[in-house]
Image (cartoon, rainbow, N blue to C red):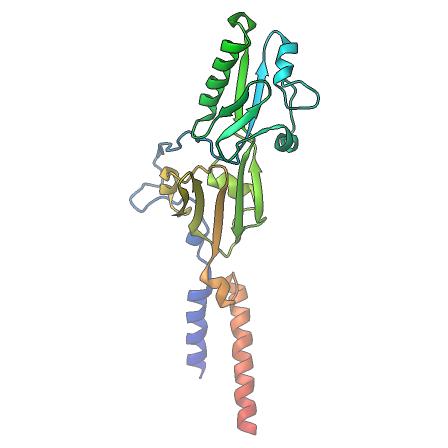
Length: 264
């Protein structure tokens, strides 16, 4: 009986405890030397604007009164710094036809263009129709934050925003409270929107090869899912101490039931 209990306890510990290999990010491959320096080539491509994106367009020139005509804010100045919250209301939303509506300029098609290409398009239109070269116009076009949604085994699930031009999936995870101990870092699922529909991809964040993945850099409207490890469904505990406590409780209960059944 003791041998059976010990064997059951030992087997349960081996299968229920979560290894550090399942928790450590970007581990080197077996062939890599621990003291070697490895350079990962960036595979991030310029993001091409899609429908429902929100753009921040700022125009500056010597003639400030003329610039104010192109503003969407109530203050009338495009030069003033807008907070991230007001960008939703004062920014330029890409409609279903891929256009943004800029005061005076009218509709500008931005679908499939990069932010820099949109900037060049607006600058060209302003110079051709409203400004001279001597006006020294300066246009900046940015996405109003990298918006993503993350659910599953994460500290703070829900929608998140990173106010920067580019961000990695590691930054998005850190911004959302990191993956929990019972989260599966080896199969992080990403659902990405494209003009032709949605594509699903999995990335192993415990492997350093993730740095070379085209999905290592997030894009606006990415949906990230952190799946649970099998240990969570087993309910035996996350650490060895928790597993031992749970198993001992179960064994104690079974022993008690056996004793009671013999006395009856």
